[in-house]
Length: 269
Picture 1 (tube, one colour):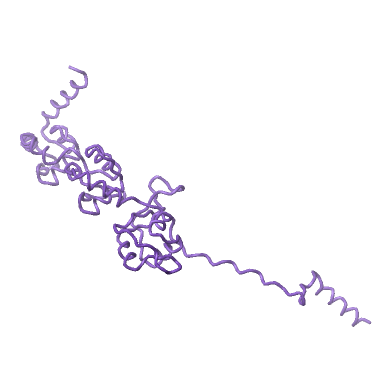
Picture 2 (picture 1 turned 30 degrees about the horizontal axis):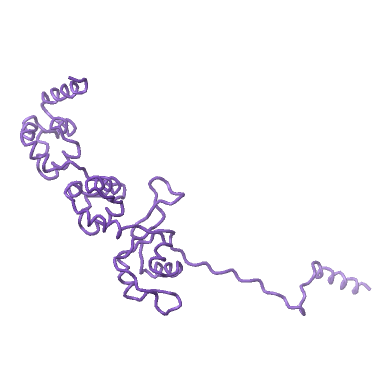
C-alpha cells in the first residue's frame, strides 16, 4: 500500500467517526468535490444542515453516502467553467478546435447556458458542456463568434473605417464585449472587438461612401460588437493662420514704442 493511499484511508476513517460534518468534511466523506456538493445541495440531492450548529449530522451523511452513485451521476464530472477552460474541455471532447469566442456564441444561441458570473465574466454550465456533442455547431459558432478589430470589421462590411465610426456614434453598432489592450492590467479590458454578422453584406452601392444598403446594416446590428478603439468624435482640423497681403506688411517689433518717442520730442520742441 502506497503512503498516499494510506493517508487517504486514515482520513476516511477519521471522517467516518465524526458526529457532525461541515461542508468540507461532508464533501470529503462522500468523496465529492466541493463544487459537486454545492451542486447537489442546489438540486436538492443532499438535504441541508440539520443540526443547531449549522452542520450535517452523521445520519444525514450516511444516508447521502448510500445514494452516492445516483448523486454522482446527477451532478456530473465537469464543474461550471469560464470561456477559456470551457473551450479546452469542448476541444478535448469533440476532437475539433473550439475557441473562447465559439463558446460565447454557443451560449448566445442557447446551446450552452450561462450558469453565473465570476468577476464580471460568464461561467458556463458544466453539465451542458459534458452533454454537448454537436461538433458541427461548434465549428459554426467558431466562425460566427470570431472577434474582429474595428479595422477588420470595416473591411468585412466593405466600408471605410471612418464610416464604421459613424455607425457606432449613430448607435447602429454597439459594444458587446471588450478585450485587453496593451496597457491594461490583468483584469482590465478597454479594447472592443467585433463578431461578424450572420448575413453576408451586399456589394457597396453607388454612394461615394461605399456604405452597404440599409437592410444589410440592420441585419448586421444584432451581431456586431465594436472591438478596437473606443469610438471618439473626429477632431476638427486646426485653422490655418491668416496670411497678410503684400500691401499690409507686418509692423516691425518696437515700431509703436518708437512712434511714441518721436511724438514726445516734437511736443518738447
